[in-house]
Image (cartoon, rainbow, N blue to C red; front, side, top):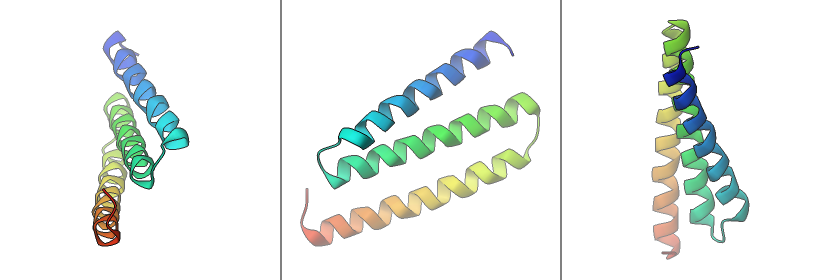
Length: 87
């Protein structure tokens, strides 16, 4: 594996680790949901790196589908929190 792919993967793993920490320790529901959002987006980035390394575009289809579902869930949560009156 080339050095730049290793560096990029290390960055993705670091982002996932920090997001997991916020997911476990986040004081509010919004903090936890945003951490889960970051965790999923980092995972999508990892899948994109995997697709790049293996030259298989099928991984990108999965990454796009997961990213769309995550976006829709983030919008739904924002609407829910707004209706509930939380900042």
